[in-house]
Length: 178
Image: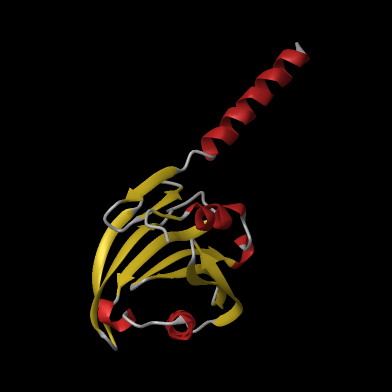
């Protein structure tokens, strides 16, 4: 009898673990990316004033109401004018990414914990972590020609470095590759 109860409990726990792993694939062909979210995200667009004019900021975001280690999972895409990147070199791309990092830190009045230069599918990028009041923001930013892709997860201090942060950030894929 005890073996049967143990076997049932193992099956139940295994099934629960598998259910917890079933994230939803979100594919945005028009925005040229795929990412996996814990639940279906909401898509919005905002006009954002910048030094190069008003840009459309496409945001695909999921904000759990409870039962999750994180407060926000999002992918953001903004397209800059093509002429701004016509003769862009590595140094220019670095400057653009530097501006994105500084802007992210400033927007939340945070502190930069780490900032790593990365390559993603041949494109330049940054992987950063920002300490803000009450929590952390993990961001991967990629400059794909004249488009900026930002993946981010926001977590509370006591949930720092949880597995779902990396699961989301690592699920991001470009449909367009170099």
